[in-house]
Structure formats: C-alpha cells, structure tokens
Amino acid sequence: MTELIVDAAEPIALIGGADLGPEHLNILQTLTQTFVAADSGADHLRRAGIIPKAVIGDFDSLSAAARTEFAPQLHHLLEQDTTDLEKALSCVSAPVLIGAGFLGGRLDHSFASFNALARSSRKRLILLSDTECCFLSPSTQWDIELPEGTPFAILPMTDVRATTNGLVWDMDDMALSPVGRVSSSNKTKAPIVTVRVTGAAIVTLPIGMLQAATAVVRAE
Image (cartoon, rainbow, N blue to C red; front, side):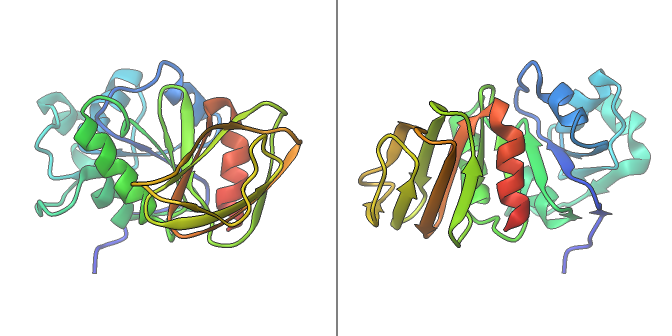
C-alpha cells in the first residue's frame, strides 16, 4: 500500500512540471495554503517562493536547485509504471485536489493527465489549463449554478449516456463516445444546470468558474 504523505483538511494544490497559466498560483493561493509538487512542479514553486508540503515523484526532471532547497520534503518513488500526477494522487488526501501544470506542453502528457482524471473518482480532482478547469462528472445527478452563456462541455472518456437540463443544446439520455458523438461547444441558458452522466466523462468550464466546479466535486 502506498504511504499517505499529505492528509489535509483543506484543498491541496498539486503542481506539475508543465507550463503554468499566468494566474494559476495566484488563484490557488486564494483557495489553499497546502501545495504539493509532482516532480519538477517543485521548480515552479521554488521560483514563486512557495514551500510545498511534499515533493513526490521519480525526480527524473527535478532540478538540482529544487532538490537542495526542498530536501526535507522529497519523497522519491522509483517505479516507472505511473505518471507524476498518478504518483502524487496516490500519496495525498484532501476534500478536493486542484492540479495545475499537468495540461499543456506535450500532448501525450496531457492525454495521460486526462486518463488519470477519468480514473480519479475517489480523489475529487480538478485540473486547470490556461483558460479552463475540468473535472470528472459525478456518478449521480448533480446541479451547478453558473451565469447564463457559460461555455460548458461534456467529453466522454468511455461510452456514456448523458441527460442535461439548462444548456442551449440539452441532452436526453444521449449516447456519447470518445470515438463518436461528444458534447463540445455547448453553453448554459439557465442559472442552474442539472446533469446526469452514466460512465466516465470530463466536464470543462472556464477557469473563472473554478469555485462552482469545486462545489460540485466536494459535494460528491
């Protein structure tokens, strides 16, 4: 069993080594003071003057400067069967985890992060891109309060069925598939959107809706 390294009562910000959006760290610092770095994500924190609770990974991309500065926080996981994000997820616990620095850059790394997100139902994970936040749709019916006209997408990671109320193009038990129909470029037409998805699907929203996304993920 993997050792639990950080167990927090507040959200944990997970920082990866891919490029960060210009406001990611500022946004995260308004939500939590608990930061965990996945491998070279520690270099982002070192440059920003943020001390992580832990640095977790195989350290194949961690700089010598970060190794020295954060030596007491290093937790070296040698196995090569999982990504840096998966390693970090396996060692932390919190009401919600918000990851930045995992999307963007290399396409295969981003896809691996979406794969980890699709399998993260027990971890309550949200990932940030430069402009959006995304999370795994809860397995039961859920509501979210958003301004009218908010972009809203449901991206299936396997064959799923989706029902919505409150979107411009609502769905009624619609079949979605990663090799078939997806629900991209939709938007809200009502202040409260109700969603039911059976199967693994990722919901994307503008990054300005992060607090609304967090409320959904924490409530599951």
